[in-house]
Length: 367
Image (tube, rainbow, N blue to C red; front, side, top):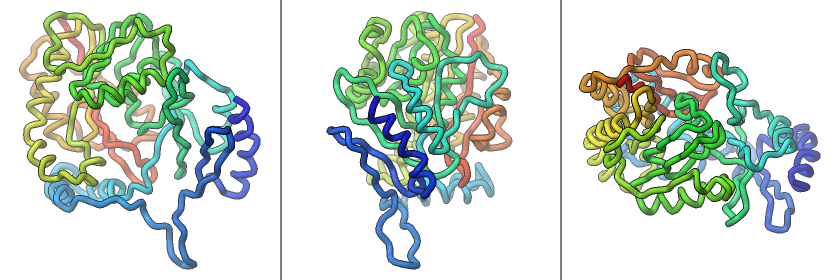
């Protein structure tokens, strides 16, 4: 706590001289604050260089063939953000179980604003996520067994599926494809579910998921949280849950553009919609009548977004699409949406609002 207070006392000085725009703060094991440059050394007249990541020409070529057809002229601006990791930002999701007014003050002094401050017409929940309108990198916190972190860094668009899910105290919730755990953490910040089932099929990712949960959720809630390593398609034998989040495996555009296994990803992409449809159907089968399912991905691909939900809607007469217009419109100050979608909403990155891609659709089970 003393370290955070010290940061805040220094913040006005840092802002005055513009240090926060060019440096990040970190704290070593002794509690000493480090101010680290976000810029590489450069000679006079040479502009800041982007972070060195090797772009996959194969994936980029694949995207350049597909996305202009689906997004038109928007692709060029989206492309420029995706190809410049130096422009990517992270939002700060506070941990309600280890909160600090000093931390909020520090975030405010650095120009961060609450993501939800302009949301209206939706029930207020304790979830607090802060975003910056200028380039900023808040320091990450390392995992320490038995010690709760104060915040989680994530893409701000990742909060939208959780807000669409509208978790309430006492809900029985399934996060079907949960790893690495950011959305599960956000669910716990928004409400105290009667039970939260966090599942992921990838055993290596489940290890990270457990570590994330340990870093953010007090041990007194251990009985309310279950972690499993199952194929998401195996759910649905019983109508067990009030709400299900399907943050489906997808062709993660940001990640794939810098992948070393491009050929494998391209081959995998044509099979993903089939898997996504199966996962969404499993989610619908596992939710009780009157319950809701939120489907999300972090890709721009129409085949993995609208088409998946459209296929399930056409084959299931006991579900309906829920309107999210009021929620998404109230967050348009932070997010840019792709126009013309008939099913769901797609956040697309742009220079001033670099969040996304993130597709979200919500379904209700009628009977």
